[in-house]
Image 1 (tube, helix red, strand yellow):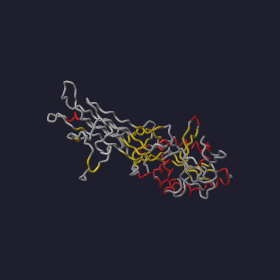
Image 2 (cartoon, helix red, strand yellow):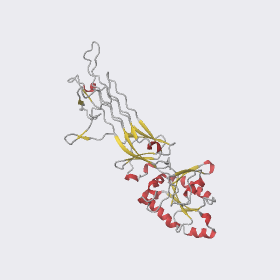
Image 3 (cartoon, rainbow, N blue to C red):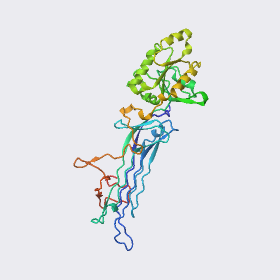
Image 4 (cartoon, helix red, strand yellow):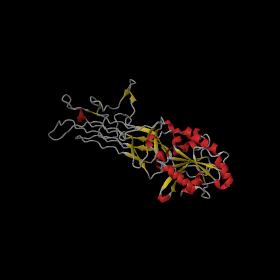
Length: 407
């Protein structure tokens, strides 16, 4: 069986570019035997940037490109010539993508809008050339700063579908049939549980050329919040839905009990889901006569708007669309993305400044004495860089990293 094109979870390895080394060049020209230091600065390493793309609906491209590496900065040259900056890498992701640290599970950022850019990894800054360190007491500095090292990080990208209405129900409750009746979506429909194995989206047309988006996720079973069935994997998709439409079949033993079980699973998964407006659709009502219909109405749960429908005959679908449209357009149900708490991977939402990088500094490495040794000290005015011999440092070669003997 061919793999599905819908990919909502992927783990990738990202690495920003390392900064180029500063040059230790000395000016030489005819009649100028002692021109002094003129080594240029190293170029900046490339950044890793995430960009939202509203035309994408899956993380499939990243499934086959799991290693994202930015370009390294080139070393400085003579005549104070700065090295070329490393090439940035822009990774386009669908709107609604959430990023976590793969090692700690910490929530890092989320991309919600088309064209929104999140700076994930900052490229290393280039080292200063030797001309920065000349003084009245040292007119020929034979040292320069190395560039900052690259930052390497494994991250997990999860896609949470952006939809106005999310369908919630047990397997074989008629959710896919309802989606196909209300929209042009054609999900797989069959008379057995777990027919739907991946989320489906449909655009529901309304009056006056208006429309809203409905999402169908695989059926939830009792214990889904603890990992049973397919529910845990796909429950996150309804976190971004403005309205939750519970679908319970009319032939269920106890409609109110099934509704309470579904509600309990959502609350265990994410308590914030209880703040969303809920609507109950009793499906398969074409099997009931008027007398049975009244008996079913008497058993419906209180505190939730209920609509009796049949996706096969079209019964109650117009009323259902009216109820859904009123709920979707209600300002109280609009989702403020900055207030969403992301449950998976035990992450916590943190608001970050747009111009800040998620990771802007390489990890420190222990020195021989067991202390932390910083690769550079760009913020220290007294730092003048390390000294290298002619044998181990060639500033014109950008592939040699003075910080790594194996480079």
